Length: 436
Image 1 (cartoon, rainbow, N blue to C red):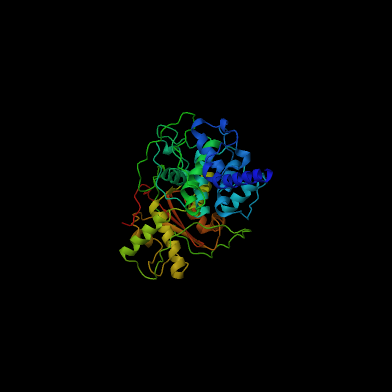
Image 2 (spheres, rainbow, N blue to C red):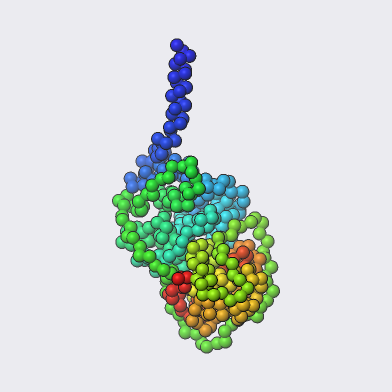
């Protein structure tokens, strides 16, 4: 009799073991009652899927710190790709998650090798971190300019990231079509957006997982607020910056100098996805150019390294009392094309063997209408900080970056080739070519 009972128990245990993963799709999360009612189901699912470290499974309405957001990012990345081996250390923290995300280029310091791990993360900073995380995972998100009523409140370095999160449906507004970029981001909002990113880019390669249904847009208040559907915008529209009237001067084209020696990097840095259409050693036909432009957009357009160089340039200009530069969609595309053409054709010069003078790519291929232009190039640097430091340590390159009457910039990165294209006009609102 006893043996028969044991056999029955074993059958029940084995049966439960087989069906539990199917039946327990959304078990209750620890301390779930501390979450807002609209967030509880999504948080339960995120916990079940292993996207929430135990230390963050409580106090869901509390503000997320920079270190806590890094912990959530590590949980998502390592679920998809396994352990992150590299580390980048900071002077003010030994948090392993921070060091891992810094190694991947997802998070950065605040200066002087400090990270400020306990500082609250803002909504716009969260959007930029999520954008960089998508690049690190290998699935960059497509870009359109954000369409919020308070776009003018966005920091220049956050425009692209916020646009990507809005386009992908990962982050929305807080009501009345406002994004509130400087507001703090709560733990429950951070968890839900990580879940949405995982839904978009994670489950496609994970056939053993139940595909969750995307959650409705989160609201920072317990009562959800419907987020208006954004009107698609073809090109990013940065906040207009008053354009100083320049005194006519000769275009400050630098005399090519020796490529700055790359700063040694102790650990490898993953590079963003880039265009795959090869540029031949001859002039492109219109159909070939259209194909390259279409591929540029398909790869996500502006990449994380290019955005980081823009952040570094404008931070330096602002520290010296200069106006930040507008990101020109046309110059961004022309700079990427120049970087790729140097790689594919096999040259390193301001003068292309196919297109001639450095300004011709911008004018002839992409229709940039401004006469006053300049260009910086570099090769071999493995990080945005390294190439920026190299340019700032070279007089000609530094003068281009700090030229007072400069208004626009485009940045291109391709296989360790770097290009900055500068313009003195204000064409940031001019639609870039679409490839059609």
